[in-house]
Image 1 (spheres, rainbow, N blue to C red):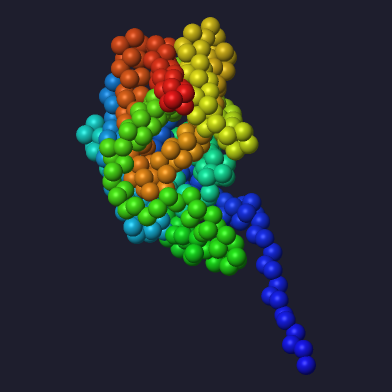
Image 2 (cartoon, rainbow, N blue to C red):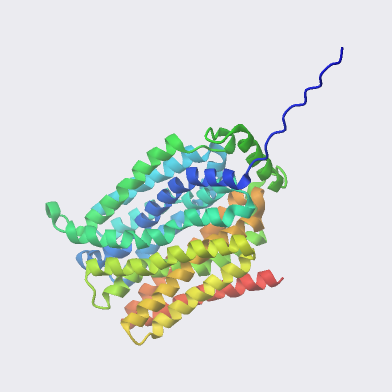
Length: 427
């Protein structure tokens, strides 16, 4: 009698692109929505200023400084926040961040003088600290390096969308709600735009898995493939995450990010007032401010896809910075309002496009172990320019009465970033 040898069926190969697509559709929309409302709560101060400054008696110099003090506490708490998230998990920590910043953003509607405004900006920075670098770190737990630029762009597109969609919404709220229940439109703006943050925090707590092993919406073989792929990119299990605080790579990348972000926030906080100086109403300024950032959102997606196809993250980052710097410099010397808007659009395109390419470069340069704290440190150093950029614009505007010199000063930021990134890449 002959025994029959039964060979087990060979498992079908896992389609890696399909797995990454499932991850992206499950995680990125929620993270993008969270960053969208975070960015909106962060920069809607630029729209509130259209009427708040006059009502509260804020000078350009004070407004530029007070808007930027958000980044003092934001930067101080970034690295500790990322470390806590790595320990306790993204579900709990990101939800905590969203709920706390939403409550503080809503409280800004009740400011009564300069000191109360500064205090709430500082509290908002502390509450929001860690969300953006935490989400970037979280995505490295799920997405291999080869697909990371495209997926990061899906998250970071919230920056230009926060302005493209948020600008007309802010203009509408300030116009339609002004005087309702005897309350100024800018106060309604702070309150209404803060509510989605709290709601998204609750959603995050109940729906965000910490690691691929907890992803019940992936098949067992898909989870195994994803974990194996990510483990091959992990150089080891070095838990000395805090060494990133003094790592030359971290300090160099943070310095490069400083220049890029200086232009981003200098433009975001002041663009509504720049457009209003053209003679536009509050409502018109809201819709006009959306144009540069809508173009920036489209450019960000196309530029990140180019990076995924061609590689060279340093070159893509430097070119985006040069476009942003050129747009700001051209806006300073534009002979007409139309040409100024075109130049400002190029500035927004460059400022937005640099984000996913820079963070792809940074996460690759730092590696998985050092990224835990390193991403937060890079983001903290860079975001210090969120204080420097708006404050610089306010000082120059207060001294000269015009925005042209301030735009030229902002152009120096991304220009220096491009030169620094190219120098590093050349080495």
